[in-house]
Length: 481
Image (cartoon, rainbow, N blue to C red; front, side, top):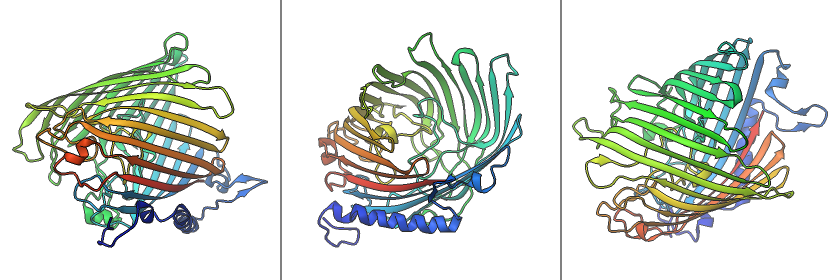
């Protein structure tokens, strides 16, 4: 095994060095970041944890908060074609949020600074890791309360904002990822009797900048942009049936994308129609979730204006059943199955587009790793979660993974066999995560590891790196203030 400059290394453990060394690096960075922003992490037993809200005297109507997260990640035996065999990275995300609520009107803003260090051109680092000094939210909110009927609640947001819809598989504010999705437009939310709710939105998604490799490696500050060349709109309805059967949801999402003077695209015009039923985990009873979506519309075969326009027919399914056992550890076991279509032969496009969704919770850590995602995959799995104490939570998850289409790129790896002769089995993934609140609600330590064994597909595909089993790990420290 060799490192990025051709020097021999023993094992991946050499690349990630040791957990104590990584923790030391994180502690130094967090301390310097905290000093810069004036954040005190210590807890005063007489007044409780230090917060910005407290420091400002808890003014009426004003809510202020912030966070700092620093994370060290490493990957060995890179699966993405053409990149460093081994890589590591340090990520820092700093966030400041403020909202002034007058009663009927809210004015809010959020500044997020996402940066990466220890990177080079052979790294997979991109706009998912770097978005320096960005105003991700700047909105005016209107609380109309019961204007549409007694016992109802209506809210309207105008400006730039983040969104979570339903399961967050298609529209999400990212948490694990170092950068987040943001939208400019209008979002109307109505909640009626019995828990019935509907969201209607029309937005221009933010295109994260810089999106060129030199700018990303330099953590260049460049404001994100929006335009009518990329429009995202839709409706999301949820209702609670009688009893404890769960929540039923239905949604329609539309994405309209065209070329702009400085950006060539595949001209995606996608419509996604989906439904979900969800029964949340409760101790001593069966919980379940089933979600399915069908995607149609048109897309170009490439980014060239002369590329052929293809009809889209794609889909995804998520099925899950679990049980939380009584007892102090609140143990839960759940069984999962995920299917997302890939592109097959013929003149239609079959690869599912996950739009603005999050995938860390089901498919493992993203960023440097992130081999699995909601495209061209058929994957059963099992997950075990425990809470050994009030400050601890731990989970482990196993998945087996196949391609849905043998000729399409496997999931999020970029590995492909256009002839379809490499087979469909892509391997087994095993991951684990542990979190501990050092100061409850304020300072949290998190660590995780993941291994993806080589299946027959990634051994035989013509553009596979051939490095062996990809594996990765991370450790992070987060402070809320």
